[in-house]
Length: 50
Image: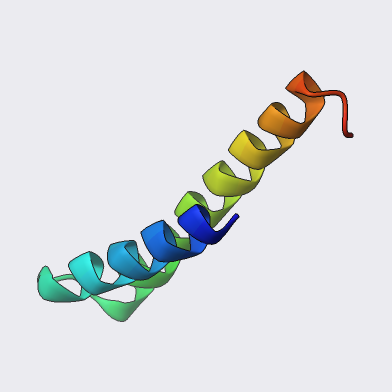
């Protein structure tokens, strides 16, 4: 879980470097966050913890 937080912070920093609007940045963050939750749930279900 800590790895996801670090990856998310790095993603936020890299997205702020690009020339994107605030709306695009918010949408990209929402998509990334939903993807991260899906991956975590998939890993948990693989180990039978969900």
